[in-house]
Image (cartoon, rainbow, N blue to C red; front, side, top):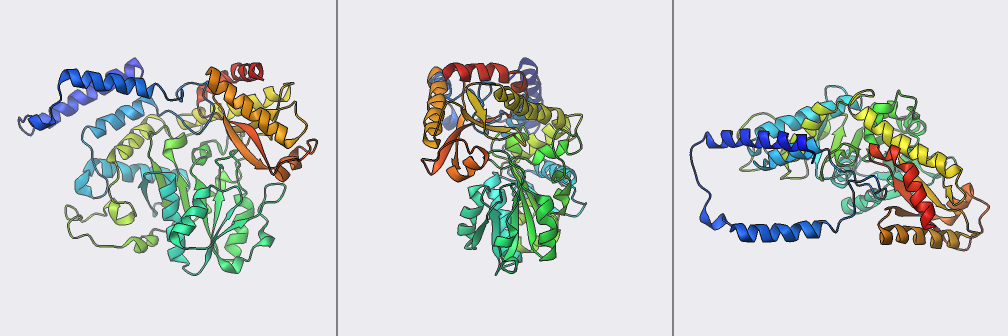
Length: 446
């Protein structure tokens, strides 16, 4: 945390302490006391253990989808956690529940939904997608749920949890869905991913939308990773076609703990039709009594949920509006430019080749000096290991079916079922200025 954020947090905690004291003097029970010596000893060991993490905060880390929360975001989270509100029922956290409703309205408006919608925050995108698919099942109980070959494994897994048949829609060479390979009469919902977690691919919502409407099929958008890139739909830096159509979907999932500057865990699910709330209807003999207003726990499969997550997201959206020229837009633009700059640099490299041009801020690439798919995998793993061993850079690996790989790179001989390539996720705006240095370090390792 930087010095200004630390001062802000200290002042805020002091003001909260004054509020706590306003209810009268009290002392912590002795059973909860810890000696200063033991406290220092435990936290000294804790610091050493936490130092064993990879440097997620630094631009040298371009591996998995791990984006540090903004210092002011986790300051807000820490403030709320000193109270520890629970956003299940209003009496568990009246202010944080109101903040959650406010951020949901902001997100619904951002994605193009009207004033009437239903939604809430969740512990993760996985849980958010589970709820969306659960509503899909309840809406069409005898129908299947479809998703592409590139969709997150969550969808197949959650279909198993829900005891719904999930079907994978094959993709054509251009990335479009092979809708002729499916029977629309069997489908109740189709999932469209705007920002796959593999390579950040934006699936063709513009292709699927008219087809789904023609056949009465619901559309669920999994924008867990890519959702906040909608801020750039009119910027020209990305193709805004699909992003502008998001309001046509029946449900949307986004993960603020990915590109929303939030700490784990903070997911969100939104439904365009608020009447799906009927599927959540339940009774609790002791929970919903402090207010006649809707309690968030009445429209959620989860019960207890951290009110601090809502507080942190509320503070973040006050500090960083969902706009192209202010707030999130400039941050996401630099992340995109980092991937694009790395792609351009690799195009002139003698040691690396890009797998394909990035659509968002994720780039796949591999060592150029190879003749076969197995050799590419071997060399990619060696580069990955070298970075970890020398702590000079941190990448991730990505597996691609060999047939898919050679559609773009037919010059390589196929001698394996899969090809493992290098993968970088440029989630930090600071990486725009760092990719040249990163490339030099990778080439040195090769």
